[in-house]
Image 1 (cartoon, rainbow, N blue to C red):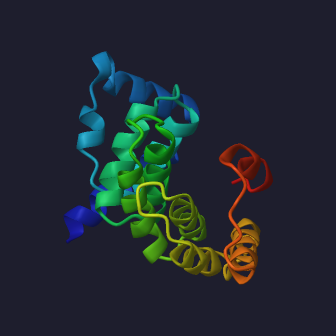
Image 2 (image 1 turned 135 degrees about the horizontal axis):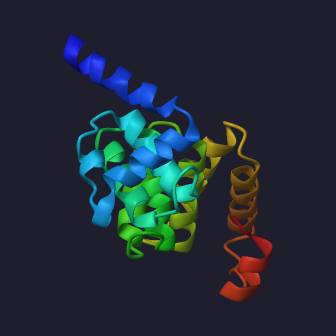
Length: 184
């Protein structure tokens, strides 16, 4: 057990190095697109942190493909925010091909761990029928769970759907006008 703890501490300590040193180390280890240094990291927290750096271009050039790979490895180990970010990448086709079924899969993993934005995003997928069959009741459940944690957009969405269903399922306006009134 001491060996694993030591590796995690070493990986975490490397994040505390000055920006220039970290950037040079990462650039040195990514010659010709190699992901070798990422493959040697096992900590989901460190993988998530590196994914964020690549996603946002912090201390390294932005690289959505590398971000997605880091998020996936962390997500597969149960890291909730990596699951949410990976779901978002699939939902929007950032660094991976757009795949709403995969987006729902990862949003659900994160939502089940209580991530409010994942709950809201999963509610939206049910509301729109993206990657899942359209189901307003399920959408409201996820929106309310998110709203209970302070997500105002989710609260607004739950109220919107509830008002529509209480008005005997008045059909929604077409997608263009709906998008203008109900944004994420």
